[in-house]
Amino acid sequence: MLDELLGRASLKDRIDELEEENERLQSRYEAESERRADAATARQDAEEQVNRLEDRIAQLEGELEQVDDDGDSLAVRRRERLRGSRLADVVDRLTSVRTGPEGALTAVLGADDTVDDLQDEFDLDLQDVLGDRTGLVDEAVPCLLCVDDAGLVAVTLEPPVDLADVTFGNGDSRVTWADRFALEEAWLLPTGRYALALVRTDLFALGVYEGDERVDYRGFESDVKGSHSKGGFSQARFERIRDDQIDDHLERCTEALADYDVERLFVVGQRGVVDTLVEESGLDVAGTAAVDATGDPKPALEDAHRSFWTTDLRVL
Figure 1 (spheres, rainbow, N blue to C red):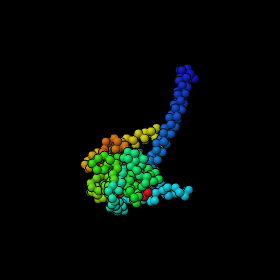
Figure 2: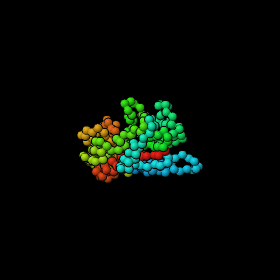
Figure 3: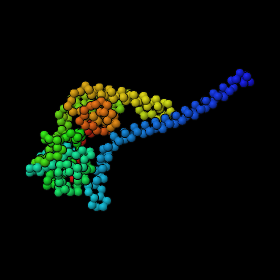
Figure 4: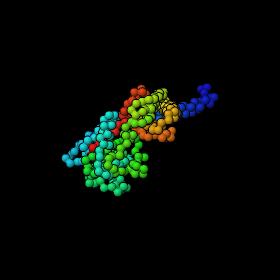
């Protein structure tokens, strides 16, 4: 009665209506935030799975190439992932092959190249040597192609370094005919002085190497929040904090890399993190790769180094 006499009843009713409206709008907001949070979490999980499964995919692709449903499908004769002394031995065998003048072809094919493009650009005729196997080369790009005019040697190698600027001789040709295969050890093996950096959202590890031996090291971990399953305002705030922490971590990584002056720098780790670091820092890198290297900085760096210096060999 007193509320009605003082005119407060209508105000209380209005407050109740506004509180109900506020609760409804907040529920809508939280539902939308939760959907976005689920999408962000799914994206992060997918990126981690991609890194873990890359080696498995390569293995399965090799197995699938051997499957012959019709009895006459074309497949590589052998596929092997090479590293260390085994890789060095294969490279040595290839470079020891001798042919007549212009009997050994070495060619660089980028990710968007095909054998037909190569033949048109450099007036080549590889049909007598490769025949239908040109399709197998197209499946291996980016790669180095080594084939002799007698067809005794026909292999592709997928080196860890970036092939974009690789040329032969004093010109700008990506193809050369000689009496031997024109392979550089630095394209395939850890030679000379270089740095390899492993970058994850919460970890940085860098080694400076002379060949296969690490001569300097720096590593650290940053405090970056992990995945979060709650929705609503807490999820949105969590995502903002995590993004800021990752930005701070990448800035710290960039500063660490600036302290090292090496001729060749390779950056590996989580693909999205690596790409962001390279793009935003303006680093001049000789190669990047997605690797699944977990654990503390130093052992993770050892795993990443071993994984990076691995070459996919296909015998056509």
